[in-house]
Length: 394
Image (cartoon, rainbow, N blue to C red; front, top):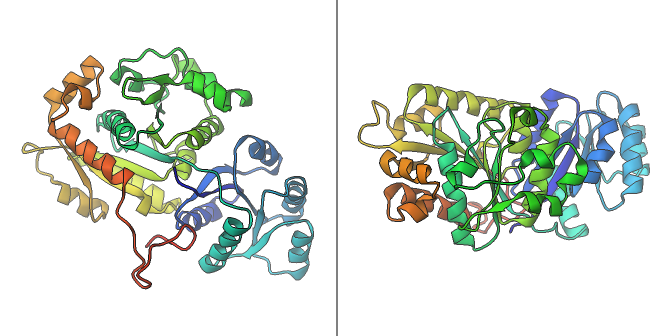
């Protein structure tokens, strides 16, 4: 399990939100665990979602936001509070410091200044508790194979890591993760939502059903009515708890790019975008990636996976897809529907149904890359990049 810095953000300016997300996701190990747009909701969020830093955007009304931030800084001295504003007024900065805010950053935020502020947190308050890695699996279109890949990837990671791996179904209406593993859960994601008490670790442990592979599964709600009641805050609360007690959390979804999905992507260490060699799938991938860029996401955390690649993959090739979506590389999962379909119908992972199959081997290779990525080296210094010192390339 890795270590990182988790941020809760108070900001009601959507345009600045994209800029801020772009800054934060440049840094390895930094996660946005919650974004709040109303000061009144801030304290409740802090009580229920663990974080190492609170970042508050004071503009356009510092007189409204600063007192709330100051009260939190006074009541929770262990939680550093960063303020951000376009104002350079000395009196405002002095008031912020008097109220106990740790840093005052002026817009546009200088990445080096921000890195130095993070270093102070990392060295002054001690390291954050260990956290697992959150991996989302997004299908660019229906039938792209996201559920198949998420399910088998979780099983492979459980085998490789010999640690705790959880698999979460975020298709609230039609999700089939439990079916793919022939499981009949007693509890579902809906049972953890609607009450803050349900997002504690013990309740989540009860809702997870364990598969023979070692993977623990949290299934989609049993009814459409239950699916309607799940909020983004519910989902983030559950995922935030799971990453604290798992080596890996693999998420089947989100199934569409919307504000709910953004809350999940904020938490993710890696996003796998699954594309088929079909024009509609590729076009959807382009739109998803454009939306992520506009929202400020660092696409270095996104990996492209071309699924069902074979001799009869129409007129498109993985190279065509990479050129269209402007990616330099992709993972390739070959086509063998007979084996994959058989495994699905039997409710078995490929590792159990056909361990030597080429599809299984490709997913195993992807899991190995995620579990033990190549060492990254700073080209200028010739040294490994550290938690706060490493900024992803644009």
